[in-house]
Amino acid sequence: MTQATTPEHARLIRKLDSISVLSEEDREAIRRLPFREKLFGENQDLVRQGDRPSECCLLVEGFVCRYKVLGEGQRQIMSFHLPGDIPDLQSLHLKVMDHSLGALTPVRVAFIPHEALEEITHTRPTVTAAFWRDTLIDASVFREWLAGVGRRSAYQRIAHLICELCTRLKALGLIDENSFQLMVTQAEVADALGLSSVHVNRVLQDLRRDGLIAIQGRVLKVLDWEGLKEAGDFDSEYLHLRHDPS
Amino acid sequence: MRLTLRPVELIGPDREGRLVFLEERLVAVLSKLGELHEDATGHWFLEASFTPTSRSGAGPFATLEDALAAIGTGLNASPGIR
Image (tube, rainbow over all chains, first blue to last red; front, top):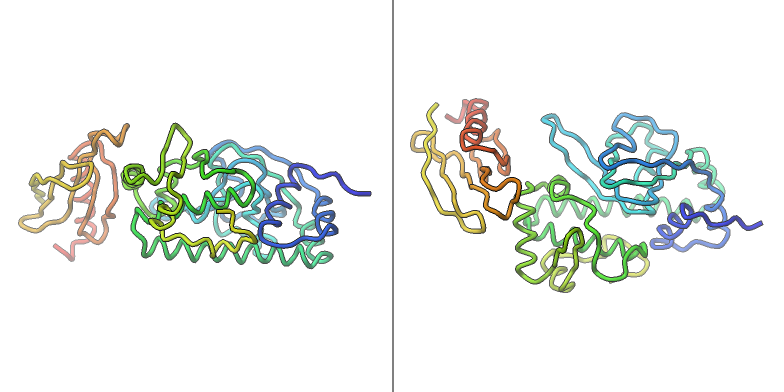
């Protein structure tokens, strides 16, 4: 009997669809994955550095970041995660968390037991390849961010991040236009891009002045996509999407 | 340790600045944040620091004294450069 698609499974299928080709049997196996749901408030940790998780968290609603806290209490955010992502998929093989996952907004998470994920990776090679591809893309995104933090100007880094978030949100079917709800604060952008919130604030004003973006309340709208891509030195190749949504 | 200040005009939205000297040597550049920065308006921001242990981009500090204290701490932590 065909399993009904829950919103949780639909998120995961949509995400894997954006980077790989799944058969109906693969989708069916994903629909059978068990999970327990949990809600987290803004700024709560889903998983902490040093934890030894026995399940992975599929993000269903809201936004999450990976981060580390350094000796002097400074935080470095390493990546932002969107619904459909499993940001701690690596815990299936790397038993101790070497960073934490924090909620940037209220989030809804489906925890999938490692046992069930191990089973699906043994029985469905295409799903295994999709998970592997996802972690490889993760590494590609880290390389892109490293190049940005090391060599791009504050203006380029912020333009690049806006382009990346827009492209990923579109690929997941979460937005249609180049416009999205700002899910991160200026301080969080600063912690992700190795800047201060003062610089982030100034650069956002510069991007507005240059006619590339508009910010109304909590909504950021890209006014000139090609201009923003050029300003951020952005090429979506590193996201390895099946279809470039831009 | 005596730090002295010289006013300076900066490019960009936050124009009011101070050059911070230890004797005749420049150790830092501070800016006073304008209205663009909402809650931090009037606070002082460490635009650039030339001591190895103070991080450019630190702050904002509520007062000039707080900013100078942070720069002084950075200088004390790296006595080799003085």
